[in-house]
Picture 1 (cartoon, one colour):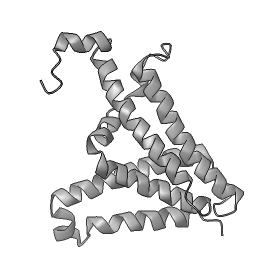
Picture 2 (cartoon, rainbow, N blue to C red; picture 1 turned 60 degrees about the vertical axis):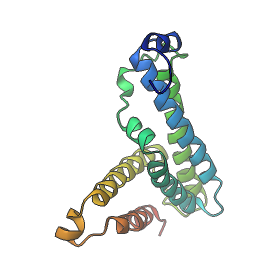
Picture 3 (cartoon, rainbow, N blue to C red; picture 1 turned 90 degrees about the vertical axis):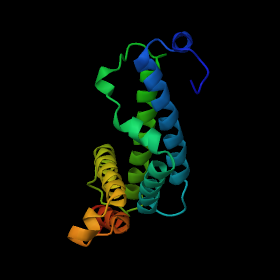
Picture 4 (cartoon, helix red, strand yellow; picture 1 turned 180 degrees about the vertical axis):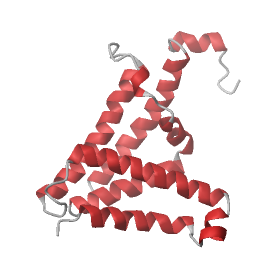
Length: 174
């Protein structure tokens, strides 16, 4: 109703419901990639860039909660990778660019010695994605209720600086 298009008209532009869903996810993933690319330009060493990307991811989840939630529901295993013009394929390709950007920041840190040389950039990019996604969801849950604060004396807003310190300690080249 809001788009003023009939259901049938939508399918003039999209093959099916999955294609429409992937188009929505692609829009969100494109915004995330652009924001990560800007964060990669942050002045400083690779560790600073990794932190900037983490902060950017948190801000993205706050600024674009619907895209963030849509991203959480994507199942790349169900995408037909033989159709490179489909929104699903394009969404997957964009998500690869996002992960490559994180891996690039990690590699810059390895190259400038701010990050341990034994860190595998792509594996670590996926670990950081999982860690940050979980923390973002925990912070969001904590802000919707009082459980963390009332039962554990943990302010959800304190978790973000803690996770950044945790990551820095785990990655730093000693």
